[in-house]
Each structure stands twice: as C-alpha cells, then as structure tokens.
Image (tube, rainbow, N blue to C red; front, side, top):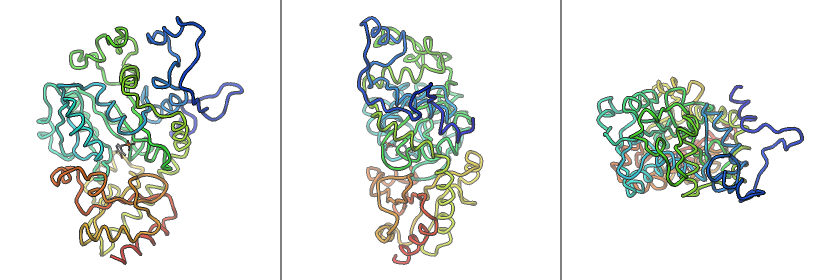
Amino acid sequence: MKISTDCIHAGYRPANGEPRNIPIIQSTTFRYETSEAMGKLFDLEESGYFYTRLQNPTNDRVAAKIAALEGGTAAMLTSSGQAANFYAVFNIASCGDHVVASSAIYGGTFNLFAVTMKRMGIEFTFVEPDCSLEELEAAFRPNTKAVFGETIANPALSVLDIQRFADAAHAHGVPLIVDNTFPTPVNCRPFQWGADIVTHSTTKYMDGHANAVGGCIVDSGKFDWTRYPDRFPGLCTPDESYHGVTYTERFGLEGAFITKATAQLMRDFGSIPAPMNAYLLNVGLETLPLRMARHCENGQRVAEYLQSHEKVAWVKYPGLPGDRHYELALKYMPNGTCGVVSFGVKGGRAAAERFMAGLKLASIATHVADAKTCVLHPASATHRQMNDEELAAAGVSPDLVRFSVGIEDIEDILADLEQALAGV
Ligand SMILES: *Cc1c(COP(=O)(O)O)cnc(C)c1O
C-alpha cells in the first residue's frame, strides 16, 4: 500500500464485529487462568500481554503502524522523544562505550548525550554534519557502538547526508541511528538510504496537534549484529536478567533490537506511554500526509517571503534554492522537507525578541511542528544550557528565530509576519 493508505490502516485490522478504531485498552494488567500460562509470558516463550509497562495492545498497534510507515520490521512506543533516543542508544552502548553523533541535533538530545549519558560512562564525539570524510573517519574509536544524527536538525535545519553517514558507520561495523522527527516517513524514509534504526519525537508532526508527548523507535531489521558478537554482547549472548534468552537467536535480526529494548529497558526504566496518548497519536497519524503537504507548502512560502524582506538578515530553509543543504534536501526529500524555518532579524537578539513580541497569530511556545504556527528563540529556551561554542556547532546563532509554520491560511501567516516585522 502507499503511505497515505498505511497512515490510515496499517497496524490494525479489526476482525468481524470488532471496533473500527484502535480501542484504548486503558488497563495496567491482563488476567490469566493459571500461573503456568503467565510464567510462559515472563520467559518470552509465548507472546501475550501481562503488564502495560512491558506491552499494551493499543500501544503495539500504533507502533506497528509506525513500523510500516518507516518500512521497518518492529517498533516500540516510548513516553517521549527523549526516551526514544535514550533507549535507542543505550540498547547497544553502555559504560565504557563510545558513540559518534552529529553536532547539529536537538538541544535536549545534546544534553542527554553530552551530560547525562556521559555520567553513565558513555563518551560521545560530535562531528558537524557537513564535516569532511577524514574528520568523520577520525571520530571512530575501537569501542564505538553507533552513529547518530537527525535527518533535518532541530533547529539548525541542516540536512544529514544519510548515505554518507551510513556508509561510514557500516565500514566500522556499527549501525546508524537517525532521528527522523522533522521530515516524518511521509517526506523521508531513512532505511532506504542505509540507516538501521529510526527514532521519533511523535510529539511533533506525527501527533500534529500538540496534545500528547511521545516517542518511537523503529528497527529496519537489516543490521547484522551477529557479525560482531563481541561488539554487541547484549544482543548476541544470553541475557541473564531475562532467563538466559539470546535476543538475536530467539527473535532474529528483525525482532532482536526492539525485543531487547522492550524486555530489558522498558522493564527497568519504564517510560511507557499511556494507551490514551497512543490513541491520540494514531488519530494524528491518519492525517499526517495531508498535513505534511500543507506544512511544506506554507513553510516554502514563508521562507521565500522572509528571504526577500529587508529586515531579515538571513534565512535557513532546506527547501530554498541556494540553501547550503538544498541539494541534499532534493536528494532525500524530493516532495518537501518540513514546515520549520529558521532566520535572523537584522539587529540581532534584541530585534528578534521585539519581532516575536509583536506576533499576533503565531504564539511564543516551547513547541514546534504542529498545526498552530508558533515561534521560539532557542538560544534562550531549548538550547539555553549550551555555551557559545556548542551553540555554533549545533548551528544555533544567538539571533536565530525558529518559526514553526502551521497549517493556517498562508495569507494570514504572512500578514502576521509583515506586521510584526514592521514593528521592529
Ligand atoms: C522534540 C524533539 C526531541 C525530544 O522529543 P520529546 O518528545 O520532546 O521528548 C527529539 N528529537 C527531535 C528532533 C525533536 O524535535
């Protein structure tokens, strides 16, 4: 099926007389006739539900839909995008290990990697997405376990050369993990370009209406962990915390990564989304292709308008001809990128703040990528914890305004920009 059809139908096919919508199974527990039957579930000998922290039918159906949209073999929902990125990396890297990451990533992810996971003993080397092949090669160490990047970086809006990063990762026998939040699978499917694991903050376009924080991890099922059993012992040797199961043996390449993330990480860290939130996410997914088309159309118009405005110092939008990442955007996202536009107002930080205060339709919000146009100054909000050097590496200048173009009528969005810029 085409992606618009999968957005509606994948992951759930009701049998005769069953609910047409994915039912919300808002239950922590599931009943069994005998202890023996339940024991088999705990041993992963049989599949079935027993406790929602590990698995829930509503969540699983929505995860299966996202797996289909990305063209993956298995997926797991998490309670936030932060949890998704943490689990995706921690599932294969632990104390003493190392990860290569793009420096142009979401501020929260940078903090997770550079501060919190560092405290757990995992070292990260950050490379600019446009770095030379030599710089990329030099970032790898013998204990490197993964490479991480964002298809379109939030808020730098640089485009990751997925194929180049995948080739480098594979040459070193490690997977490429790609956060595909901004383009969504409607505009880019990183598995087609060699990525091995995809993550999402479903909080953004997938949900699309700013009503539920959530995340997702999808496995392509293509990375062969068993070729490097010493590098990935967690997947290739018995898990003593789970009755000696060896994930790659029992669940194959298509199921090992997600089963381990569920049985081990979700069991122990417990960032499971409420079934109600999974339900809301699914409602958003049904209209994702329609909304993405509109976000991209409006985003393009806004970028072009800003580019020709005398009070605007610069505009960053990968869909603009002449943009540093235009060619990469055409290659990886021929149908459009996203609705987020970053730009600087002449007069720097103070002018940016005056411009933002003058907006009437667009609201100042710590959010991005939903139906309602909103705006944020990352240097004083999401990227506040970074020093100037880190800000520069992340592609966030002090005057950067992140403008998330919604799906309102474009004439109203442009009129709002016009009057706010007039007041600067
Ligand atoms: C927002 C965001 C995250 C974090 O997701 P939450 O759902 O807010 O936890 C991760 N990656 C990207 C690209 C994001 O935009």
